[in-house]
Amino acid sequence: MSAITFSAFVGNILAIFKPVTLLLMSIATAYFIYGVVGVIANSGDEAKLKEGKERMIWGIIALFVMVAMWGLAIVVSSSFGLGDTNIPNTDYANWK
Image 1 (cartoon, rainbow, N blue to C red):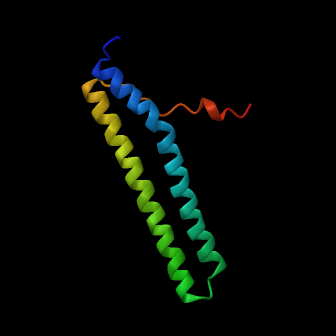
Image 2: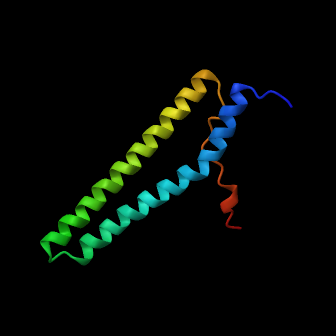
């Protein structure tokens, strides 16, 4: 049984969370777009218009928080030399 270094451990954790982060960002983007469609489709109904605007705001807030935390994680990991600091690899979504 070999010992794992802290840097390798952090790298493994980052490798696990990269696809999860992309999934959450996709969900937040879809929620924002759902709000936009709600605003456009229900422009005559004031209550549904407000509901669509709230969805758009929460979608933007979720995206901002995720991108900010992602940036903070990159700064911290590069400052301490932990794991890789690259943008997640999307080779699994190769559209050739």
